[in-house]
Image (cartoon, rainbow, N blue to C red; front, side, top):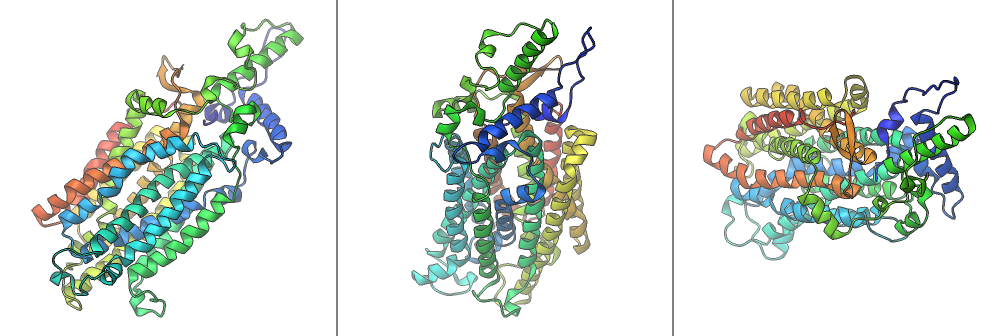
Length: 557
């Protein structure tokens, strides 16, 4: 599904023959293929030429605007969901178990939704209908989530302080429904959106669109955390009755605008048309090698150079890549691919799994950690009590720390592509995880306000790393049609794998990590009676992720 990235980044040495003439480089061949497809796509009833040309930074921003809304939502979730759940009377144990509902659904259904997005045959495309459906469900959830207690009162719950709540309360299932809709759809949409970005980009733009999405997403997250840090009860804008409701109203607006801009950015080639017209398909490794062989054959005839023989199956598909790999995966193929996963993908997913364990340990409970451990507050304190006031002040202070994290994430995403080109992906990936591990260790040991602003930048570095390099590596595997390297050479893959499904498996790592954190951490917090354990857990998990990252197959990236 993805294109040949390495071949577009590195120009091979020009082959010089005894008669002094030379063959075109790999980059020149790729450029000629893109140009041919560009001209062909421009002549269609609908113009699809944007798929085969380089895009400006502004066009990449327009394409990835939905990420701003998603990161804005993540910021609101991180800052307010834990206080919301504790505020309706749940203990830490049950509160963390509530977080398990959406990852259970996501682990089983997110890859199936992504695989379905590889096969949709409607005129509007494959990814955009899924993006729209998930976006609408997500916005429904984010409207319900901060109003769960109010909706519960409407259905008959007593409007009393949290310490007086007992028995069945409507606010609990209503809030859980809002959280599941929001969290499941946001993360599933995140994976589908990245598949859509790379579908819409030529090979040279695929890494650029990922870093662009991380950059503007970081800005969106920063704005979300800043909004969470403001005490809206002291302003004239507290129009919905609480900080949580006011912030989620802003999130709803930003998400709506970002989703609309992305959905109207670039049209997709409908799958039936792509199947009929090979020149509207992405350039995979088979198509590139076939075109390279064709040019070699043409050159040998004109220059009396004897080339390597062209295989009959290549000759039949010269320049168009018309092979079985272009056909969409069926459900049974998708399920078989999960069971028989290449070792390189298993290592990559394992690294992402431990990275997510570390990140979720931090982000799900960070504001609660600041409010209770750094500021010494108590979320269960009576309304108007000093303990509750300290806790709420700590939550807002934690939001400022997370705003710093988001700023650093955006800043680092702007330079990570250059770091990869200079140092290669392996040291950049490992260093990002190790920095986060060190930052969490220091914050757990030194529970002071200033340490928050020292440790949070390391979160931004790790987050930008975690949401760019793994996706770029999957694109690399698919572009080379290889998941294994032997004797320095890529071993061709013989099993069809859906690009959207493989990308979505990254989301499954988040769901699986969230499930484990949800079921385990809350009980540990209640047992040791301190939530500093989540910060040390984040440090340990990130260290393990760095160790597994050292074993990833980087394919020359």
